[in-house]
Length: 234
Image (cartoon, rainbow, N blue to C red; front, side, top):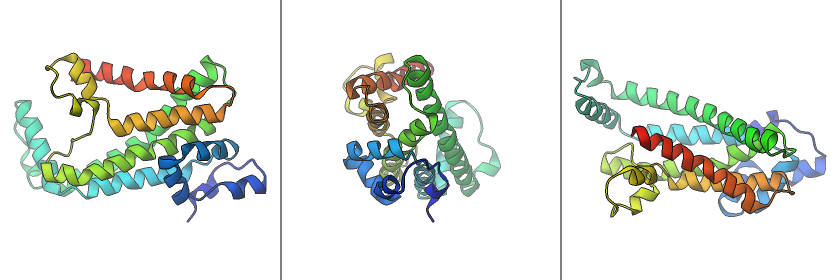
């Protein structure tokens, strides 16, 4: 089923035919985004990429054994000085289902919010003549990298029995002393940063008048600011 059949289509048949299918677009976002984004400018499909991202989140969650969810809850409860509710000790499958639901809902909401935030910055504040749906197309395709990264890390999470394991800049900066700076680096997920860079590349493609360097530089401020704020409370 082609989910993108339900996406807005406002271009000629020739342009539509030039847009590759979702599997090909997924490969392109990884290896040749410069070829993909100009085509998305003409036909900003987004539904298929958004659904694929959600499916990858579901698979990543279901591959984690239920008992690991119980272990995480137990560890968090001990750290907070609370007792683990008795029914959670045997509720690993329920916790995993909660993880699936929250992961999918969060994926949809986060994608829409990021596209809206990018529209606010580039469309309203900087005056780029790009529609929200074009930014949504860029974000939904770019963040497939983050979803794929989560799937690739799943076996390592199972082996280490740490479902919160991430590959961050801080992972390679463990020699630094504990402190705020290291906490910020620990929030900068490498797959997430890759996705943000792609968002910048896509924004430049949506508006040829904006340089790629400008778009990427502005976009990369967003994850750094988010990491800096989160690190204050972490």
